[in-house]
Image 1 (cartoon, rainbow, N blue to C red):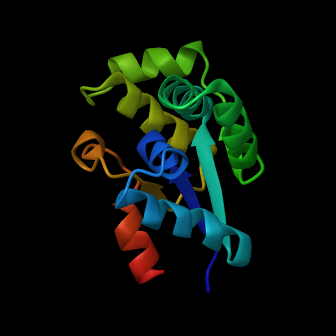
Image 2: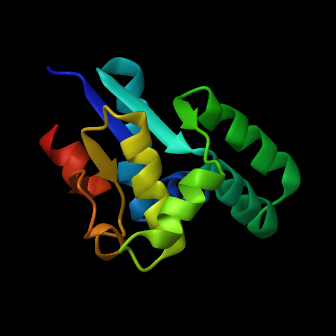
Length: 139
């Protein structure tokens, strides 16, 4: 099996951590398979911060802290800087967060797929988009 470098969008991380059924099943499978296969997981620093905020707000701070630590052991985190944000603002992608995610994935330079449930937000991406369900059912 060829190595896959996967950029994980924020919604997939939140699906996993908040156990948002039915979406959490595929999210769990992605993180589980990354331990046993040649799937390298990447995400942005913004995804980590946003995920922490959502889990902390909806559950509690202690669980959010523990959950994010677990995620950080599984993914490589790419930082976003001022230039990345300016590029996102100037991109043709309407949503700033989605534009920043696309830019972050491009910055990594070896991403095979952006894994997201928000296909519409990523329709201008030059990197192929795949849903979590598609990924676990085809790889």
